[in-house]
Amino acid sequence: MKLLAIDCAANLCAACVYDAVAGKELGRSVRDLGKGHAEHLMAVIDEALKAGGTDYAGLGAVAVSVGPGSFTGLRVGVSAARGLALALKISAIGVTTLDALAAEARAAFPGRPVLAALDAGREEIHAAFYDAEAILRYGPAVTTLAQAAGMAADNLPVLAGTAAMQIATATGRHLDIGPTSATADIAIYARLASAKGEGEKPKPLYLRGADAKPQAGFILSRQEK
Picture 1 (cartoon, one colour):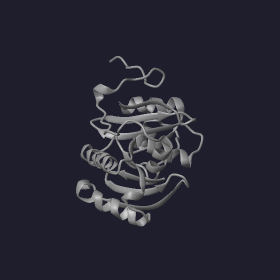
Picture 2 (cartoon, one colour):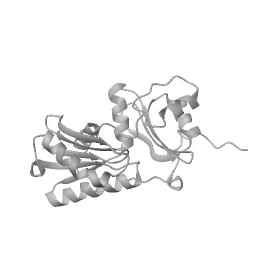
Picture 3 (cartoon, helix red, strand yellow):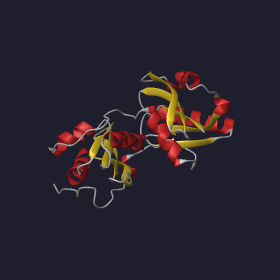
Picture 4 (cartoon, one colour):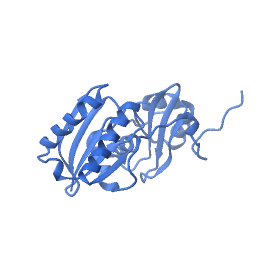
């Protein structure tokens, strides 16, 4: 089965064609836009299909990054994925940016726990913690830098995402650093979607401070002032 993966979660507008049976990428197109994903996405997809030696009729599924990320970019990517899936009568599969960043970190540091964290501004961090078996143990949720540093100090994970360096500095300890970008390589999304299979229809993952639900064992207790 050939799978199309698309990512508009951050500055990149990316697409790739992935052979799910052989487990390899067939072709890609990536543009560093910052903004304007809606105007460029279909052209990027067409370029990826051409590079992968296929067309829309040859696709068996479409994967998309669902965030956390750019509000507008996520809506563009998810809408395109769901529209293509409906038109082509194929599955649409959502993959979070935190899952993808963690997978990219694990490729460089196998068998290690990973804390994937994105700087969300307003002194907020969007984070997810995965144990050494790649099982999600916390998040995706909104935390503070102090809380994320507490998780890192307690578990000594590989850090990934745009908040990785901040967290490492806040712990005052040497920690391994994986990718520090706002999104993972497009092929990571394709590989994860291929393994995940069909589920609920993808929808943008928007995290808010009020939605964060700290889990025991990972969040530092609040200090009295």
